[in-house]
Image (cartoon, rainbow, N blue to C red):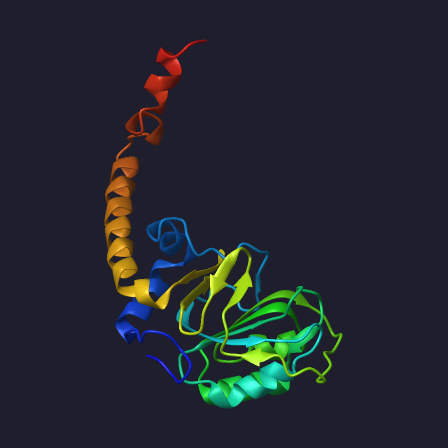
Length: 219
């Protein structure tokens, strides 16, 4: 799945596997890379999704770039909306959310505030935000669309796959998606094996050699 201005296309199956695996598993399988390390609030708890990033880099306190972004949005994409310094200004609300739904967005990630949050929570896609606040944005600075941005210590480029759930948000470079899917499968298989062992009564304290190290080491 791709659209003009995005990176390497990735399959629907790959996106589904990453979404099903969830943020923590993808982050670990990707070598603990890609975490957008910030406090995110999902407006619809329990929602899991993944999709290619479609990015608006807004002027400070301004959402004109979000309006410019909307005609570029393609089904299944994750809208990533940010600005130079996150602040509780609403870049996204009901009217923009209606446009995103009509475009088939998979999710919206707002590194700022949203408003009309009850309405957003009822839409057919997920919204993740830093804040919920009624304070509106200006529309005086054009900003940029389809450009790389840095959020929570991670650079997200157009077309990179963004994975979102109740644990937060992580991203996988578009060129690494297929390799990461394989790593995710391996991690899930390993964890399934460990889960069976723990359910049978074995303890990780022993299996990981922690008891032996603690009891055999200096007091």
